[in-house]
Length: 247
Image 1 (cartoon, helix red, strand yellow):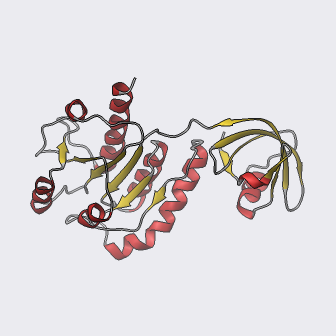
Image 2: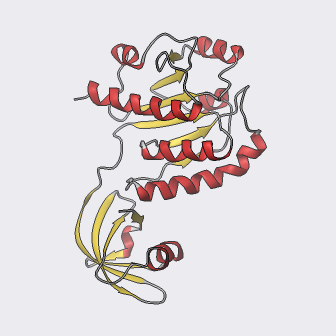
Image 3: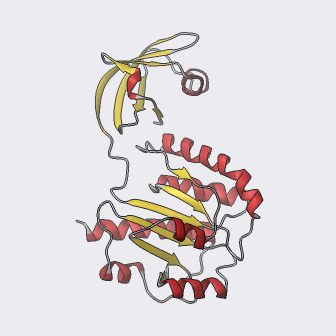
């Protein structure tokens, strides 16, 4: 069941009033919800509310809180994706799956072989943020991730600091995620950046940049994956190895 984001000040004496246009239209008109039906809500403090709709008028929805508790739908480390944007539906797929996998944010990075011009990427950010919002509702995420403005990898690393940076690049890398975690596992609350390139791969100049920076270049195995597949597999494996090393 999708949940809906609210502000904690909308909850008073176990009663929630929903009057903002977006939530109202989705619940009352798109889903055609009725009084007596269940409704999941989440506030900015990551508190999940299980409610029952008691009233739907022409401008607001009233729901009674049956129970509330801290949401567990988030990673306990910050996972960011820096990814060279793909064309059309492929990029929408990447944004959706990255959101489902719990990223804190996505950086669209302009690489040498990027399939989309920077000015086009700039116009797409708002659309991708909307996909993140809708996907967060569908998979009951506690926090909506951020889609940042496009930048180069160098600009990203100059302006931000990360506890661990992983570059997935086939052909040149022979070290696995597990090897990386043995040397330096991710800890709770760490800020981690995963970098994945375009369909055409990184350029030789970019490989040299990674080496100069001392960034870990890792492989996802012998198979050559499409860029959107690499995003899902790469992020999934990072989360899996984190779970193993922190049991």
